Length: 335
Image (cartoon, rainbow, N blue to C red; front, side, top):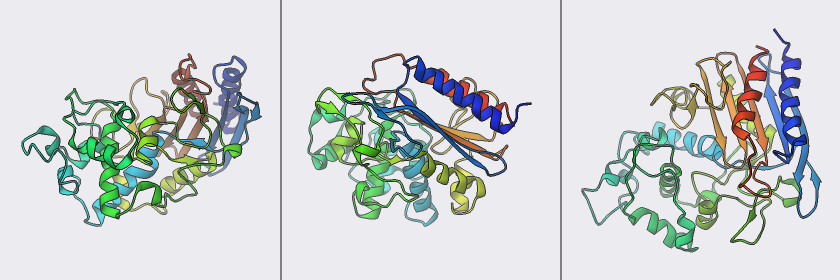
């Protein structure tokens, strides 16, 4: 069996190879070993165009859908614990105006728990930003839209609605909330990994949210969080130590709602991003920009792979899915 240091080095070698092959511009790998030791390694570039800028171990990343599990999920669960919402109540208990012109529609029956587990009939994603840039009217549009019903699938819409519920409960916009752990909703461009050359914002995005719908809403529950590898690992470390998170959060994020999902998170399953060498007590999540976090409660370890794989374009074959699995397996081989 490989030692922890050598298995982490092997994982990092795979990442460096992906950079050398031009599949991704750069990356930061962070690992919390079972003994509590933390390892950070980085390679490649934080930005390629218009100018090259080297990646650093403390580079800031647009965490994309990691927002769902690092911000929205624990916040929703904590409001459940405090009695401000019931996970098995419909969203209308907090958002009474959801599809308010049709009291019998299916959308009004969807519960918070179903949204957390991606067990609703909402579509995976919709180009909501193309319907307008006024964030207040866009919120109203989301609430009043007659949504097309699909078979349950992983859906941004679930967490956009959960984000709207958070805003109602807390009485402020998401970007006015404190995300904790040193996370933020933007980053200084010179410290951030660049994302895409946006076709409608007409610039390379760097330090501002890449997700189109989150940008148009000026903050949302499905995307928008920024952080470094250290901030992501700080969050994971507290989960492993069970030191800060409420008991309910710690339990529910490990409680399955389907064969692939717990409350908010993915759980270990065949061909998932966390590889095949983790225990069945592993949860994880990925982000479209090229980010990911996995926590193995069985082995007492966690790892994050943060890349800027969509810079300067998402329309390339980065091989990110394969890279995530191979990196996870390389790390898991050392335990």
